[in-house]
Each structure stands twice: as structure tokens, then as C-alpha cells.
Image (cartoon, rainbow, N blue to C red; front, side, top):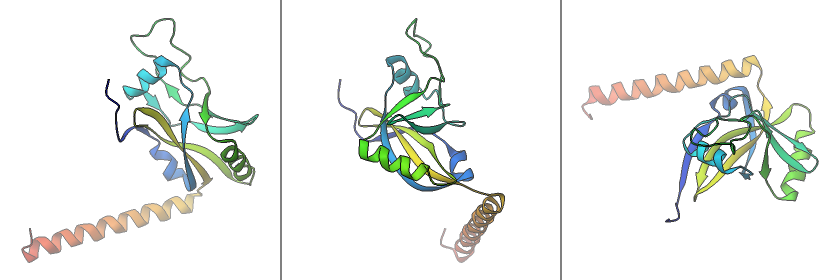
Length: 160
């Protein structure tokens, strides 16, 4: 079997960027069982309610739902079991220091395949308040209006 190259996104946590400011992000591997990998390759993973925590010198992802593999047998695991993330000890210490600050948490941002291996992008996030979310929505709407006006200008000028 040929070695796969490149990055193939599998699942994203779009709600995370809406609810949190992402201060920093880390790429880390995951400790998974065989049927979990097959299920993730099919795209049957949900990051919506997931978070990570540092416990006993390890980083664990809680609440990440990986649906059971349909062709699996007794080897299917619990869909919500905590998954251990593979990080260097220095990175774990740094994450523990960042999370100990008030208002910071670890949120999985996306799961993807990189050169045939399952990776998870972990963000150090600070929660947004309601007015921050409104500001983001207003900024996005303004950018959309600007793009629409530029398209109309090009169209009327005869560039399209």
C-alpha cells in the first residue's frame, strides 16, 4: 500500500471559533484503537461538545464522539471514551501552565489525516462574551457587503 501524502481534513469544530478566541494551537497525535481509526476515516466523528484536560502528566480529550465502526465486532469501543493525546512532555507542561490561568481551556479544533496518520489540532482558547460574538458577526457581515459591492462594481464596469 502506497504512503498517503498531504493533509485531508476529516472533521472540524466550527463552533469553537465562534465561542472562543483561539490564542495558540498545537498539532498532536491521538492514541486510538483500530476500529476508531476506520470510523474516523469514514468521517464519523463529532467534536461539537469535546474539550481536553491535563491530568496526571497526560492530555485527554473528553466528549469526542467516534461512532462505532459498522463492520466491527466485539472490538468496537465506547464512542465517548477519553482519548489520550500524544504530545512532548515540555508541551504538556506548557499547556498545563496556560490552562491554569483564569478563563483558558483546551478545545479540539479539527481532526485530519496527515501523511496517513490521524492528527488533532488542539487550541488554547479563551471564552468569548456575547458582545465579542456580536462584533465578529458584524465584521463578517461588513466583509460580505464589501465583497458583494466589489463584485457588482466589476460586473457593471465590464470586467466579468
